[in-house]
Length: 500
Image 1 (cartoon, rainbow, N blue to C red):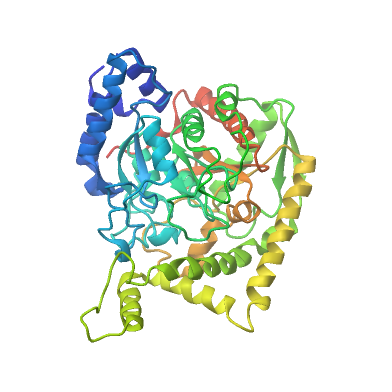
Image 2 (tube, rainbow, N blue to C red; image 1 turned 135 degrees about the vertical axis):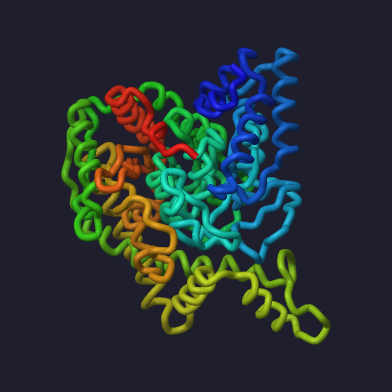
């Protein structure tokens, strides 16, 4: 098979199998995806940097291994789009911000290292909301990304570049990060699969920090199995990350290959519906709950009252941690430097550099966080938010005594038009209503497609939530739901996406 259009529509698992058997070369696969990027990314704007030479060099190395008879890993030669928040040696890493425009890291993040060690071919770095602060990828200093289902709509955020690269067939795999939903929400609105692993399950070393107690890297793909294969590559203990869990990676690939919900208890939280939820989103969610019941799951109603406070707690905790983490971008150590002409003090250089380098949303969150941490307000705001975080964690713990997993809509609405919420931060923040509680508690969660909303024909996401270090349950349930949908429709959801 050498037809480029056929190559780009293979799953990651199929691509790896064809490379291992010699039916395709890794170079052919890389060239097919690079050609697709060249053809469509001017419209989609998923990538901030395409590393053509680096990708082809990695692909040639994979082909050399196969020719020498060396054993290839389960994703060897498969192309991947990497969110521009992971340091990549010799390749620009901007975090979607002018303050790091043109910065070339001297080292690889642990996730980047593990991808290279697994012979995954990194095509380039994807667009994102600046410093991962946003739900739409409109906060990127380099312009917004379009949703391949409708280029006038958002592809989610902060990882909209990664989700759009998948949905437009520019890459079969991608990496995202999830602080309050930034893997799952983009997956939901683009009809793809995104997983937030258990906090500490994937190393944060070399991942530019936004909110350190919430940030988590994870896999993005077009199928549940592909996400599991990628999850297995990037997960595992890392001594360079003090929050990394020193425990075996849950058997996610095995779970994805043997998906079933028979005999499982599936929880539905009453707080995850109501005002603000689109009718078509709730319709598809209710149909999926019925499907789970039909597949042999027991549905259990849950009441988690503290979840109603999650959004408020998150938007105190995350900005507080961001105000601390982003203090390092001072114009003195690396990145952008403005005003260093001999007439300004170091303090003045820092001030004018941060004014020029940070966008409005980043400045808003730094100010919010600095205020919440300031003398006299710490206990009233940040301290209270941490107490709410404890209540949310307890609600999850009580729920998981009754159920194996929890399901909900991933987002209250489908993809909204670019610009619609740009001047209304509160409306924008509501996009993460269902995803934020998971980050506050540190649990694992997945979003996968569960149909199209009838009113706009756009993808709806199903969120599956599992207890910490039970990530395999996500894949077991996700694979069962995906298989049921594929059997019903005869093809994956994504094939209905409008052609570019």
